[in-house]
Image (cartoon, rainbow, N blue to C red; front, side, top):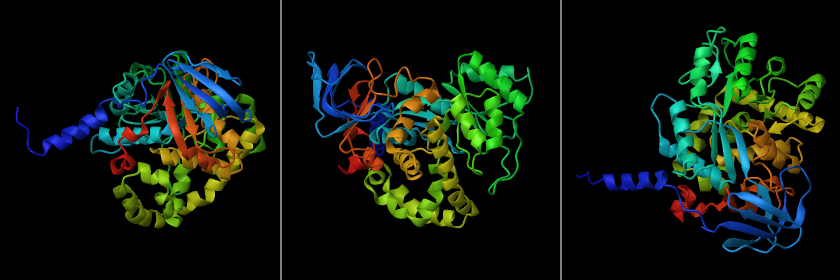
Amino acid sequence: MKFPLNFAPALMAMLFVAAPLPVASQATGLLIEDVTLIDGTGRPAVEHVHVLVEGERITRVSRTALDAPSGVLRIDGRGKYLIPGLMDMHIHLTGARGSAGTDERAGIRALHGYLYSGFTSVYDAGNLPDYIFGLRARERGGEITAPRIFATGGVVTAPGGHGGGRGATLVDSWPEAIEALDAHLAREPDMVKLTFDEHGWGTRPLIPLLDPDLMSRVGTYFNEHGVRTTVHISHEFRARQAIVAGINTLAHPIIQGPVSEGFVKLMAATGTPMVSTLTIGEGYSRLVEHPEFLDTALYQAVYEEELRQRLRTTVRDSYAARTWTTWMKVMTPVAQENLRLIVEAGGVIVLGSDQSSGPASHRELELMVEGGIPALEAIRIGTLNAAAFLGKERDFGSVEEGKLADMVLLNADPIADIRNAQDIDMVIKGGQVIDRERLDLPVNRVR
């Protein structure tokens, strides 16, 4: 078969992102020696720790030196800091949003950007089902290098409700909804996202709202089939209704106003995980007022130059002209304080950016710390709390014996400065060291 002359470069590009990338070592295990451990549980950092990984799991965490079994790669952790793999529990992976079809390479590049940034798990909270479930299957089958992908597919909402476009499951009555819910379950979602927001705030028009009683029936139905639920809300009243309805988690913070003392206590008493998603709102004014963030090391490493240039010019100009930008600038500090109050009361906050890039997920950590949440707690929010959001805290989310070995080795102390979580020496997923220099990213094409 003959191909056109320009086919070979395209074919090589396709092979580069489609094939699984080699890990940095094919050792049967790892022994990280004499490292400062920040284990993700919220406990203080511990110096001079030795962590043994055999296969894909952590088998020993010790304050005394360990013998390295045969075939184990020994890693010198002196002067370095070990944290669990970071997790973003609210993304919308790029590549399938819009009417122009799908761009799988763009999605895989974004996934590589998460890994490069130290994020070993992501939860896609709404996407074209065929696209995201296809990538999830390829990640789990070892066909592509990516963080662990958890996905909802399309959202569940009322006809005309928030997110009710392509791939959504639309419900308006019971038991008539069961057939549609069964079709949704057949795709084996890791979690189901409902939307419960009538809008009418900021600059948004009013839209149809899911009936609260129907929402309760839908949530119960999914739970009875072993699937957890999350819900898009934006203000306290709807969040209270969702908690009473039995929805397991909240996909956003309260952003429309300060939370009441009673709501803070409710969040602490119920332990309902709430995802942070500060970055999606703050990003508008940040780009308008401080576009220089695009020149920092992590953004240069992960963002294509064409994208950075477009953000600096046409996108920035568009944001500067929008009333929404001003509204979100005013309300983001309100949301930050709401999160801080819930953390202070003992509630469960979870890292989520509502975006599609590792650098944006790191910005989420920065905003939480800037809002008054201690860096040690922010690390827990981005690791163990994130695993609890999925209902998988027994499997991963902390550096403890028996858990999956998803970890990040840092060159500097993230407790002293949360931005040090970007100073990455090594990313480990399932006991395998990721070869960050082979990821399909601008930093490696330059290299």
